[in-house]
Amino acid sequence: MSRTAEEYTFELSDKVSRQSVTFTNRYGIALAGDLYVPKASESKKLPALAISGPFGAVKEQASGLYANQMAERGFVVLAFDPSYTGESGGEPRHVASPDINTEDFSAAIDFLGLQENVNREKVGIIGICGFGGFALNATAVDKRVKAVATTSMYDMSRVNAKGYFDSTTQEERTQMLEQMSQQRWIDAENGTPTLSGAGLPNEINGDEPEFVQGYFDYYKTDRGFHPRSINSNSSWTVITPISLMNMPIMSYIKEISPRPILIIAGENAHSKYFSEDAYEAASEPKELMIIPGKVHTDLYDQLDVIPFDKLDTFFSENL
Image (cartoon, rainbow, N blue to C red; front, side, top):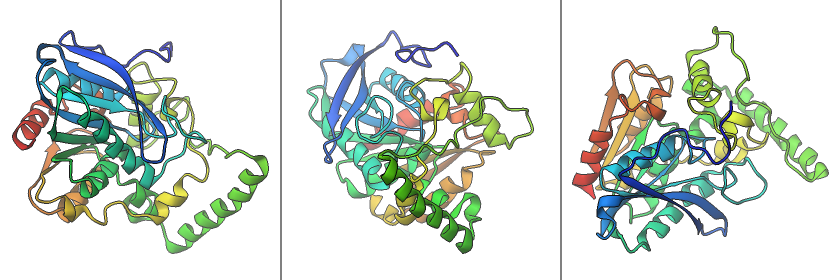
């Protein structure tokens, strides 16, 4: 892969301007983002969106692509790197937190609401993959968010706590927590957390599960590779799952109502059950949109698959 750290995985629209920005969450972590503004409407008070994801990606990948497309449609859009990843601050690196990553979205709303060209009464969120779950959690608690959409959503707390399709047994869960508890002493002695090394392989032979092949095709090829992306170039720390395993993020999804939710997933996505279960748990108004024949990573960057017109209509009607 030849992409440099400053390059994006998509072309900036000639109808959109992009500016690098920074803002701080309530834990004092400086977050890095890109602000996308439609050129034709820069002097007006516009509706705004905050976007992040996928889990382990950076703003130069899918979230930036989404921001570029939605700015073309008349929104001011902030795509940002979550805490401890990409160009955002936070030490140690390559750590996730159900609380802090939820807060990152609210900090993005703080920033958008202070922009002169933004109508702070018309602000929404789009969460992609693992940040779909954090987006729903943020919307439940942050009443400034007027509408939320997710694509290829993961509930990172659930998948870490219970495994795919809730297949982790209590014995396996206990063993995982025992191993990570012991790892904390190793990390404390070394003075730095150990990376898990459980990132994507540098090569595949084609007999891997579909979702592994899909992730590889996006993160490890010129299609979506970025050197700052954990999924492209590294791995999370060994003990990252600890807080995710112990802090469910969907507990208050019903409190998003009466604000609307749009949940989008591919028909053949391995992750579709997260979206279906979130839809069932949420209160009205809500909508589940299934894209026929498509898989999880199709909704990362396939412009002929991602329903941007639907997202435009949803936010235009509800912000």
